[in-house]
Amino acid sequence: QLQLVESGGGLVQPGGSLRLSCVVSGFTLNDYSIGWFRQVPEKEREAVSCISRIGKNTKYADSVKGRFTISGDNAGDTVYLQMNSLKPEDTGIYYCAADRGYVCLMGTFGYQYWGQGAQVTVSS
Image 1 (spheres, rainbow, N blue to C red):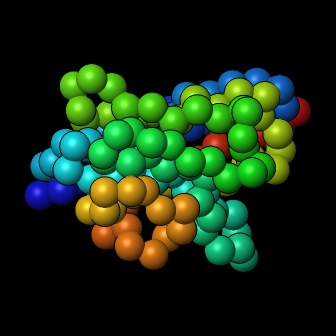
Image 2 (image 1 turned 90 degrees about the horizontal axis):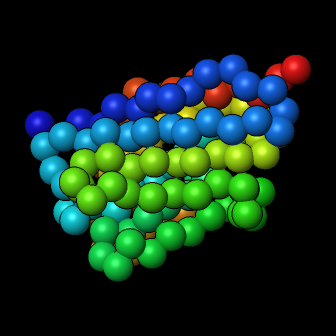
Image 3 (image 1 turned 60 degrees about the vertical axis):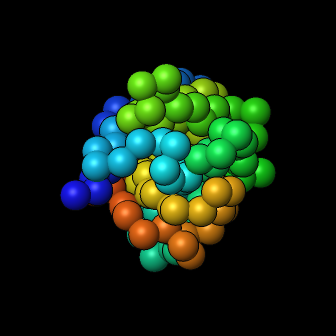
């Protein structure tokens, strides 16, 4: 059974950092591309970053470029999202998701498996 579990969310002041983890089971990072998404009430879920299963190419939303870094561990079962210089507008529920495609997508379409989400709140 394929599962994704996020952790590492919390409350942080503007300018602070958090690292989210997405632990996968039932598959490895060589089998699926992984995306990170965030959602706030009354808005559509938006792509934040993704990492491809082949070549480990990465993509970022313009709003987080230079501040967020996505990476996968060598064991092949955890994807991280390092978030620095956090802003109040980064607040939301962060989800990781898996897509069978070779190249990761910056959009929700195509992601078949989703985690339960982790709350990130950036506030003073």
